[in-house]
Image 1: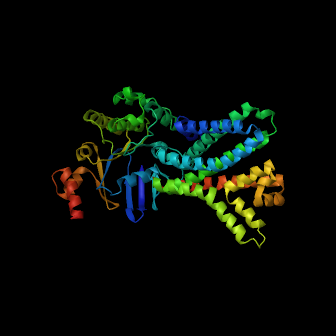
Image 2 (image 1 turned 90 degrees about the vertical axis):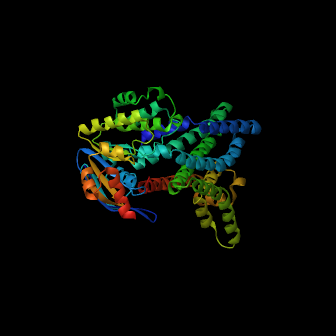
Image 3 (image 1 turned 45 degrees about the vertical axis):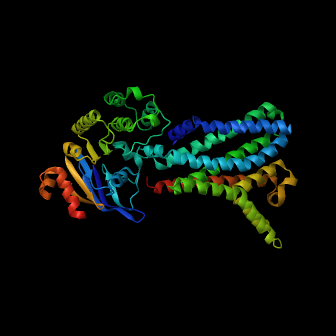
Length: 235
Length: 260
């Protein structure tokens, strides 16, 4: 689905990605993990074409992404911080995004699911962080695309919405979609992901299942396995 | 691109500032007509105001809109849209809504005063066309500055400096050059000097059309002598168009290379 070869990106003197190779197959939930500033968001934004790599090649569904922007029809993206134009109403924003991408009826079901109906006529600037994140989720999941990229999907969500989000992700997975997730909440990652991609210093340090990671690091549980990678490499 | 243009335009039409700008021009038009009591005289006074104010407002609005709509832009970038259409759509949204405030704000009082029966209608139309050109030019320059500067304060600073330079400082330097080298033939220098500043160019263009030799000044006189009135008008329009096209091309180029 997504292949990345020799990806390099520098911001000023800061070498964020240095020759990253990654290939993600069709179907399944892949968690992209790594310490702060390891390049997770840069990697995701490169796939989306928001960050222009210095070197390297990215293909999505067999097509090189530098050629045109149509491949983004195949990707649903949830940005990390839900910054929306603050003078728009929720209803207007949803309508606008539908107008820009394509028409869908899914939004009604998602609005119902996240109980957003009372907020539809409020301006986005007046919403709390968690409610904004729910709007963000509606915008992401309302299009039925084969690839879903979620950057910190859990931030600001209450426990009930978190459960609904997990269910939603599972349903999408069963449809055979490829889902990429970054998160700092290890229990969430452990619960939902099929495979882990661990980024360290701009390269892939580990790619495989959680049990493989535990064997590799000789740790009984996932959280300690991650911690041991970090201490071994930074001590 | 048209969809982005539509949303940017709606967004601006709902903001208070478009109305403030519109109301300002409405008031200016009414006051000038009232004070001058004569259409052609009002047009001349208006020219002096437009030539300084339109660039300032275009610059500030352009920079402000770009920085304010950063979130909207990031939302759009993840959608299947071309970068050039996102930024050109936003640019045209700002430039068109500003031009509309200008044209309607000034147009309405003049129309009610009896513009259509007056001989000043062509001069007035030219004034509005030049104002629109200046809006397009300075909004494009502002977008260029904002695209190149992540830091808002720096962006605003450069934008104001650009306006100050082209509206005030440039003329001073130009004059010093003309005085300093007065023993040499300066026709070509002053022609080129005028072309290189859209504000000077607009002023010369309007004065050529108004045909007021007393106000033409040295450059205007050379312009007229060199090109003749009609040819001069065409040359200045081409130069003004270039002033729009070049910055717009740079918006497209710059936006393709930028990281978000």
